[in-house]
Amino acid sequence: LSKFDFSKSNTNLSGGSLIFSNDGMKLYVAKNNIISQYKLSKPFDIETTTLESSQNLNDGTNKFARINSMRFNEDGSKLYVATSYVSFFFNSTTQNYGNAYTEAINDGRELATIVNATENAYITSIITGSTNAIIGGTSSGGHGSNRTSTYWSWNDGSTWDYVNWLSNQPSDSGGNEDNLEIMSTGVNKGTWNDIPGNVNRTSIQMESSYEV
Image 1 (cartoon, rainbow, N blue to C red):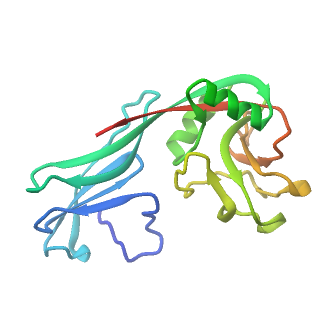
Image 2 (cartoon, one colour):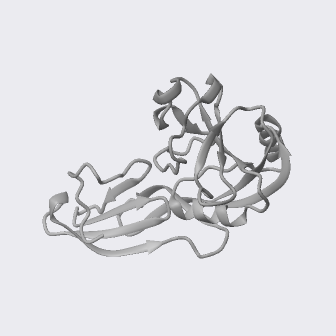
């Protein structure tokens, strides 16, 4: 980023947050694992922003940051960033969606949600074998070619604004493909496909922790 232009339609702040310093001369923008600091030449005027710095909260391990919110203390001297961290684990047991979901909960985890390409790439890297893996997306409403991401949601409530669909998917073939898998092999590895809840797949579990 050289400048954060909020007026352009290709700027995606969905699922992110922003906050001004008390004097309006600094702007902090957070999205997923990135927090950026901007200076403003005019207080609270977003058209005068210039990027000063960005920080990636990921540390290169299986611990991925998702910034939830930001808040200054009363005198504006400290910025507190509430962040959840997620780790992903491959479960090689082949089972249907309901059983995969239950096993994840019993393990103190949940089925994985994916909010950016970095997480998707890591999950793709830990899948072994040729069986596709269930992840924690579900769909309701819409049919056939109209069954787009508008109708999909993540089980944990994460914002659905990153997708990596396989070509011509989701298709809702048979009218009952309400669950989600990530492809495990070949040129389509890492892409997503909608599936019925009764097919057997491996799965990706996710474990969360929270920090301020």
